[in-house]
Length: 359
Image 1 (tube, rainbow, N blue to C red):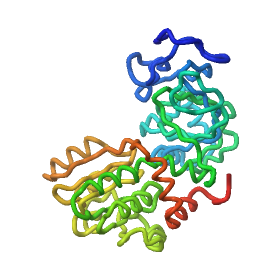
Image 2 (cartoon, rainbow, N blue to C red):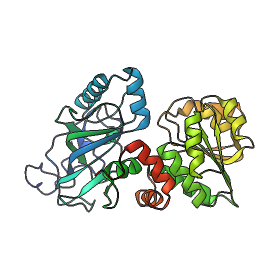
Image 3 (tube, rainbow, N blue to C red):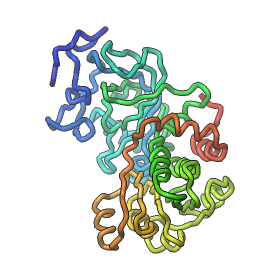
Image 4 (cartoon, rainbow, N blue to C red):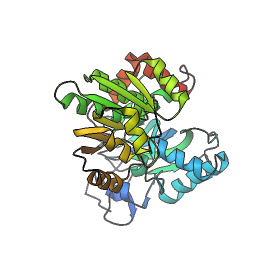
């Protein structure tokens, strides 16, 4: 642990400013960043540049929740127990199968005097960094979670480092809605950047277009000047739901894991393909759907780098492939603006998060 010689922490705190990226919280193995660690130290005592959050709700990422649901046959008690086991063993919510976690909402309980995040005790915030690198302890056994959705009512605490990111929740949106939007806010921000940076008016396809990140990516592509936006979905139900919104010029249906079916459904290859599907095996279809010189943006936590890289090589596909890292400056504000200004996007979100008036 690096003690750094900083000032004494506040009430119940630890002396010495910690590493800005949280190295002092890594229990094993030594020398790795918190995201790669097997275990983190969730000690509630903070250093002067840390912040402690009183947890209210976790939002598991879609790939992680799907894996847990599948592994336990949808049994809510087993899903709940597995999440508690992971957090208890690792000091963070880091699904060992998918490698992903999610994010959380809570209230700032204590802010160290040297924290650069600009947060004050009492601020209700959403963390915009992954639970895979956030020290976390759960104290209520997740007793209020029915295990049937990605959003998890919870009590406990989490620790933010000097280089963490968090945003104060907006007062005009229900908490479940705001949390769901902020969980995927990197997708529309990077989609907008990629589409706007291409010459002319590029064509765009979004795989998994009726989901949270997918519908935001559609709206962002349109706003960035796309000439044509195609949304690909897996079922007739999602096809009808997305077609009714008008977010896409064309809505097509195919299993994103079937490369030939994806390419046939998309038709003429597009300039930009955005992958927002939460199951593995979607890399090759995205590559086939993309024109030479085009760009594929992978937002799914189920993406395989070897499958993408070797698949593109084997197909002699001259495409640029980007991994969406979830952070683009201003991403939270931009995503919330899309939800406020696009009723169809908000409707798709609230169909997943429940009552739009709930706080």
